[in-house]
Amino acid sequence: MTSFDLIIQNGTLLTFDPENRVIEDGVICVSGDTISHVGDKIPEGHAVSKTIDAKGGLILPGLINGHTHAPMSLFKGLADDLPLMEWLNHYIFPVEKNMDADFIRTGTQLACAEMILSGTTTFCDMYLFEDQVAQAAFQSGLRCLVGEVLYDFPSPNYGDLESGFAYTEWLIEKWKNNPLVSIAVEPHALFTCEPELLKRANQMALTHKRPLIIHFAETLAEVEEVKKRYGKTPLDHLDALGILGPHLIVDHAVHLNSSEIDRMAEHGISVIHNPESNMKLGSGIAPVPQMIAQGVTVGIGTDGSASNNNLDLFTEMDMAAKLHKVQTMDPTVMDALTVLKMATIEGAKALGMSHETGSLETGKKADIIIVDTNKPHLTPMYNPFSHLVYAARGQDVSHTIINGRLVMENRQLLTLDLEAVMARAMEKAVDVRKWVSNP
Ligand SMILES: [Zn+2]
Image (tube, rainbow, N blue to C red; front, side, top):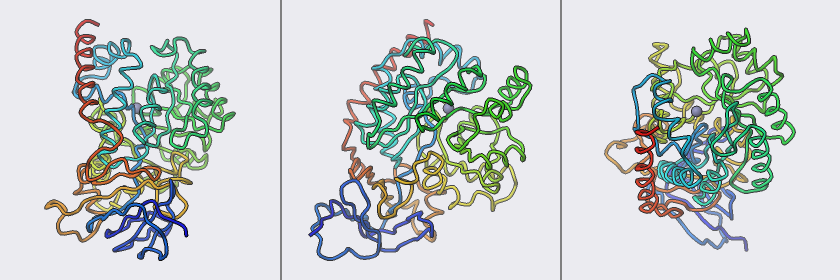
């Protein structure tokens, strides 16, 4: 007799499978790390280790945060509403030049707690000391795609660029075959990375069959800087360096024209849209409805906590849906289902992870969340997709399961000591204040 390790029942299943099936009063069964049954009845003749009652709520794939700088959770609210260079020079750089592995571990644990508590099961990270990010994520039970940021100047982690490439190779080797952690090659941006750096990073990504992830066309200032240095648009610059391809994932992609969007679709380049960060930093509005219409795969991300200031994908979805309606003055663009797909199956495709996550389908890894709809702000419910985007918040997630493991049950974190993590974060904030006042 086969057995199920976990069964979730008594809720509406939103599968995000190719038919986008919705199963009322559905049942999902998990064996080990894998979804072994999706339907409306519990298969007979199986032993069951644990059953979760969804209490009439919504059962859906865990959300995918396509772009984060997780340790920056320690920077939220440190400084807001400032011009970019003032913000960087007076607040972010003085902290970043002082921080160490322990600071990164603490910030990542804090971010992991926030993500699990708001229904995120996978995140894609770019920062410094990424081995610490990977370790903290792995211990928290989160799935992640992470990479050490590479740029032209010395890093507080690895020192010179040569050591940065060596560190990235070491990360790829260290984490290969890990069930939760994958490594990407991550040059920072076109204005912080010389062409030689970009070409070498691209070669490393291709050699190891890893994604290449970069901030791209985020601000007009960046576009002008690239034009001044290389006489090209950001896309033409990457094209001239031979970097365009399906392994490329770009964050932001705010300033693009229609023919550039076509070329991105042709090359299979994926985009991560970060609406709240783009709004807060005054970067502009990415042409996401056009990208989707022209065949680009688009996921959604929060960006770092200093420019958001939270990691809650529910508020991010709400913003994404509304921002594009304002810009186009068309309430039909970026409907709730489209936005939810960006946070689930399309986000998984964008990160090259749709074979294992992003939908509730037999054979995929069991990354599942339950949203408790027994709340005044979610009652009554005519359309679950509408509620998830326009009414629900991260706090409405009651259970989070990642890779078959229950990591939050009835809002209790099971993999992190939340009190201890927050106490350490408060200690790090004392250091941050000191570094900012004595740069
Ligand atoms: Zn970013």
